[in-house]
Structures are given as structure tokens and as C-alpha cells.
Length: 161
Image (cartoon, rainbow, N blue to C red; front, side, top):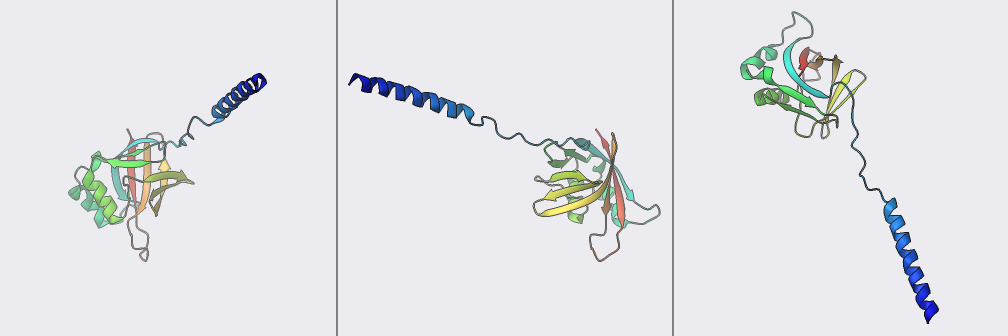
């Protein structure tokens, strides 16, 4: 009976060592969240909006400061995890969203590729030409949301804060 006890202790010891080895091989850390290093990452404050072509009339643009006097407090925060939020002027956010010009909600994701800013809200995707510099960014928005009408662009200027 004595050899059986030795074998039993040896088997238990081997099992414990094997279990510890398997446990130590498991992944302890979850996959890291991808980090986007595009220079857009940071906070950007609204500076101005104007027709892309000087002398062009876009009546709705003139209404924005009247309907949203706090527009110069509007800030877009682009995070390195590709989330974007808007704050500082709820009325401006509502106007931009209602007009279909630029929609940023609680679940909006961003991506910059090939000179375009892509904003994704669920299944809705908007793409805008973008120009980026260290402290200034411009986004070009077609103010004609009716796709049967000719393009009528406005340029929104932001400064990095």
C-alpha cells in the first residue's frame, strides 16, 4: 500500500504543477484599446463658419449666431480611442444636428483618412473634407442636405485649445 501513497502524492504534485503552469499561461491583461495618434486628438473650439466661395449666400449660416449665441463656446473633443463629443453650446449642437450639417452625439466615433473626417453614429456615416494644422482645423460641410441640389459648401474653422 505504501507505493500507492507515494504514487498518489506524486500524481497530486504533478497535477498541481501542471495546473499552475496552465494558469500562468493565461492572458492576464485584456487587449489594449487602440490609440489613434492623429493630430486631431484634443479639444477644438469653434471659431467661425463661412461660405467656401466668397460672395456666396447661405441664409442658414447667418441664423446660427442668432439661434445659438453661445456658438463661440462650442468645443469638440476628439479622444485617442476615436470617440468624439461636443459641449459648451447645446443650442449650436442641436442646430448642427437638426440641419444635418454635422452630427456629434454620445456614441459618435471619428476617423481621419485621406483628407476626410468620417463621423459614425450607429449606421449613419458622414464624411467631410478636413484640413489640419497644429492649432487650426477646417471642416468643409455641404449645407444642401438635399442630395438633388447642387453642393453649397461652408467651411467651419476650429482652433485647438
